Image 1 (cartoon, rainbow, N blue to C red):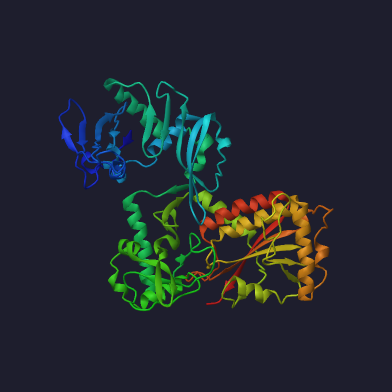
Image 2 (cartoon, rainbow, N blue to C red):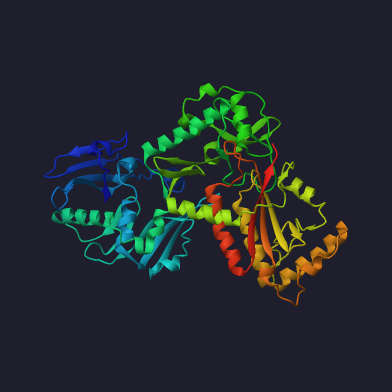
Amino acid sequence: MQLLRSGKTVDDAFRAKSDFNEEATKSGRLFTDQSGSSPPGWLGLVNEFTADGELKLENRSCSAVLFLDVTLDGAGAKTRTFAFAFGGGHHALDPDAFERNFGLKIAVNSIARSNLKSIDLATLESTSFQKRIQASRKADLQGFGIDVQRDLLRLAGGVPTDTSFASSLAGKDALTFTSKLAAPDIEDKCKRALKLFVAKDYEKDFKFIDLIVPVKDRGLLDELDDLVFAEIKGMVAGNPSDLHLTLPEIIDPEAMHDIGYFGVGFHSGAKTGYGELAIEDYIAELAGGRPGDIADMAELRASHEIRVVADGQGDKERRRRLYDCFVYETVHKKKTYVLFSGEWYCIEDKFFAEVEKDYQALLSTTPIRASTTAKNEQKLIEEMDADMNLLNLDKVKASPAGAAGANLEPCDFLSRNKEFIHLKDGHGSAPISHLWNQGVVAAESFVRDQTFRKSMRDAAIKRQKLKGKTGFEALLPDGRSKPVPSDYKVVYGIMRHPYQRSKKMGLPFFSKVSLRAAASRIQLMGYAVEVHLIEKAK
């Protein structure tokens, strides 16, 4: 079951290339499609094993979509159009014509939190992860391990409280339900479904689904993309902007590579390779080419790529869409929207404010370095190594007991103030969220594992002798003593370019969201946590 959006008609509901035919009906409108027969793609291979090679098998499929107009009860009630898809009928429907999260809202309004059986989640970090979790029997929401601060609930399924409506159901944009059903019952099902769609019962246990909502409306997406395209044109013309680029995932986990910009509007010939992804370089390359050749964001999205560059040539095997690297936050029609990893999200205002408040509470006003001319993380480590109050533990590997070969890095530097300093180039080849995770794992290992602590202390003694420094081993407990976490601080140091328009240092919104979760875990162990932004020279 799906619900047609207000203002849309049945004629709007089908994709442009649909071949469905309308059938005569007593009520509603019915469309069907019978595909032609065709051999399965694997038939040729199978026939190589048959005696005569003439096995004949054919695929055929039937599809149907039934549209029903249902007038709701009550004075002045509106008429809404519902669609029921059978077979492969749903493939012919245009998602933009239907209410988004229709099935999900019904599911969370009708399934008690203790009666869930399956959920689909998308975890929003620099790389988005999607997963389905299924329980062998009815289970409570808590058992599915949802992190309400950063997980998008995409689908929910289970047993509804009212089993007269359905014995089981699952909802995303469409609602799939199991129920004994005859034609006279359908109108009542539609009315009950619509009441569940607009209900607010879900706010008791599932309110978090309103915090971050993917934008699916094609018209709104075009409006938001137009805003970004206008920012790009303005930057080419020399105007400042807070649009920036962040790699949503590692290009190559083994080594650093130069990257270049490719697509419509860039100059042809040998490409310049850059050691980092930066909006300034992208705009400079575009301004030096033919930016007028790009008609709109749709053309830019389809064409522009970053690729690993060697000898002026781009490697087509190691590339990704540039649109996926844009990061932009804007207020449009009084709503806050974030473009991240190729997707637009609408952020609930209160949640946005809470994330920003928590981020500001972690942000140090006196960073370990106010600025640096270092071009990357390794150069920054070399620069900081001269400080006698810091001990370089970069590339030190320590393994907890029972995990030989885990090779965890305790930190990049240990300070005389008992700070574990973790560094990252915020414009380098690895996402910022990796830094948060490194800090969490190292902090947990230091508190819980004697073997890890002894390995770290032994390494500190060797490193300080090598560097001509003393006294750092006294900051770390020996193998027989347990540390007091409140004596220590976890410091995240991130090299960043300032935003062009505001001239301020900052982080992408979803990096702040994942930081919030990581910092909370570290603080629960007893450590203090700080974020230090280090201005990276152009």
